[in-house]
Length: 115
Length: 115
Image (cartoon, rainbow over all chains, first blue to last red; front, side, top):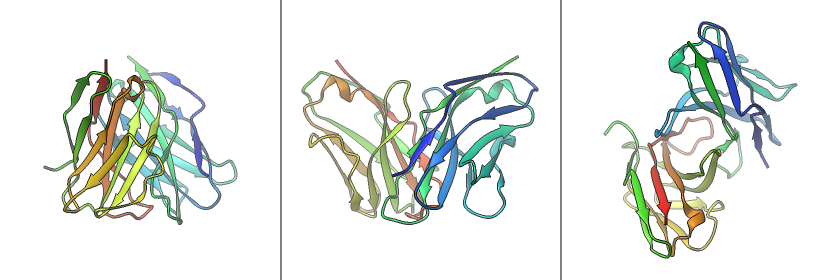
């Protein structure tokens, strides 16, 4: 079984400050990890993914995430937050192999960037 | 179109009625997924198609739910004898193929409300 935990329902940060949205995962094997963002009344938009190799992954809109195998974490980060980054963020995991093809999502973290 | 298209965008119906939700994936994408998102919650996997076949139906919550895909393109999710707990946003996603390392591209969803 695979699972994802996003321990914070809500993260508030001031514009221009760095932001972190936390994610930990549990899988019995090697994971593929993803971050998605959801704006109101919209579907999810892909931000970035970790497949293999460099633990620091860079994605869209200046976001990056660091894969930490020992801590089973994949936290999303951005050096300087924008008000327009305010949205709902989802972490997701998938196994490298096996028949399961669906993503397993965390419960989401609402990010609010304050002007 | 360039992205995943879902219709209708909103559907309000009475308890006990049947509903059909449609998904047009990105052209050429062989893998297609349905998810359910209840208010304030993460995404719940329903079913996965590879081509016109559904190798994973494990997420369908009851036999009132069914889905089909034709022409390796359009998919329809049908809910029979709707119940109030079926109220949710139903999201469709597609990916180029079923490989685990590929991101899924989401539509904007169908917001289903059961009165």
